[in-house]
View 1: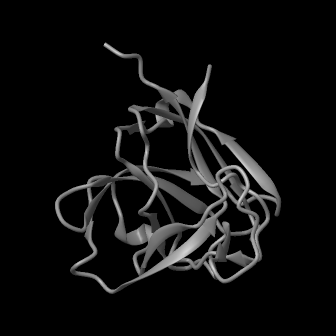
View 2 (view 1 turned 180 degrees about the vertical axis):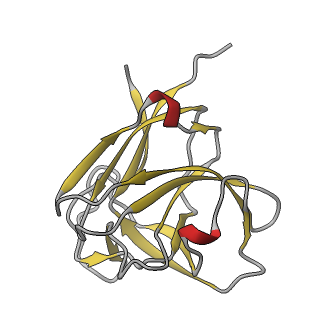
Length: 171
């Protein structure tokens, strides 16, 4: 089964993401399908990670399609196969994001800013992201985040997170 990948090939990077919502705005799924695996590089062992799919609405609005919880684990490259009943259906144009509990001491996914020396091999280029002070306790599938209505910061970062989808059969 050939998987389509969205996001950066996960590797160790110099920083840890903040514990705020990070929306990866500049890279999207090119096909419809189902997320069957998440790959990421964990830099904090005790923090649960919520990896998510967001659908662009009108203007600067993004709707949370659904998310998967990645339990705390060792500091290293991680792969999480998603059980059939927890797989997220994606559409072409959907984007990925990551968020945490407001009680988390930090984020957990490795990242780097565009001012740091980071390899740009395979899919390692920097992507435009929005960082929003919204947490797991604030979000449910179907919720919409309007970047015109909430304070946020836009930056170019490399985030060590990658979604793997099984592409839907063409009808």
